[in-house]
Image 1 (cartoon, rainbow, N blue to C red):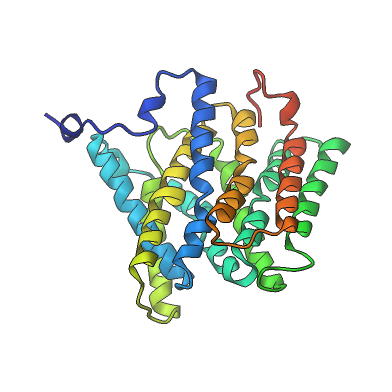
Image 2: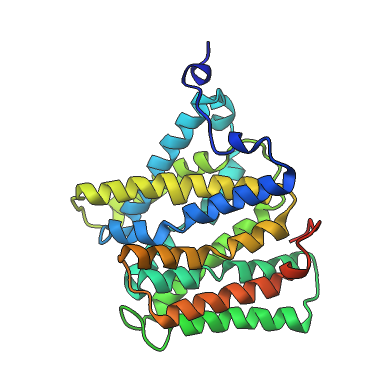
Length: 306
C-alpha cells in the first residue's frame, strides 16, 4: 500500500477533477489569486529581516512542502527529473525577492500595486510575441494602467518617495509578466514550481551569507516566512502555472486582475500596512486598465486566446 493511499492526501488540484474545463481553469485562478493576496501581509510580518534571507528560507520551505506533496502522490521521480531549463526559467520568473527589496523603500501597499502592473505588461508582451496590433481602446487602457501606478505611488508614499524602490517593484512585475508569457506555451503535466523553489533557495541563501549581515529571527517572523514559502510562493504559483496551460487564458487573466485589490483589502483588514485612498484608487485604475487592455470583457465566452 502506498503512502498516498494510507494518508489519502487530497490536493487542491485533485479536488478540481470533476469540474468542467472552464470551471476548473477559473477555480485554479481564484485559488492562485487568494494565495497571492497574502504576499504583502506576510512580507510585512516578516520584516525587517534581510530580503535574501526571507526569500531563501521561504523558498526552502516551499521546496520541502512541494517535495512532500510529490512523495505523497507517488511522483517523486518526476519531481526530481524536472528539466533544468524549465527550473531555471521558472526561478527567474518567480524572483519575488525584488518585491521584498522594494517593500521597505516605498511601503508594502505601494510596492504591491506597482508590481501588479504585470497583467498590463503581459498584454504588451503577448501582442509583441504574436505580432498583434493593439487598437486605440486597448492602448488607452494600457496607458490607464500606468496612470493607476502613478496615482498609487505619488505624490506621497507611506515611506517617502524612492525612485529605486519604484523601479524594483516594477522590475518584479516585469519579470513575472515575461515568465507568464513564456510559460503559456508550457506542456509539462507535473509540478515545476517546487523544484524551482529549491534552486531559488540555494541562490538566495548564498547571496544572504555573502552580502547580508547575520540576524536572529523571532518566532513570529519564522512563522511568517514559512507561510510565505507555502502559500504565495508555492501553492499560488503551482495553481497559476496549471491554470495558464488550460487554454482559457482570457478567463484566468480576468480573475488575476483582482489580485492587487485582494492584497490591499487584506492589508487594510489586518491593519499591517497603510492603504491610502490614492493607493486604492491606483489599484482600481490598474485593474480597469488591465481588463480593457486584454479585451477580456468582450471575449470571455468561448475564448481561448489571452
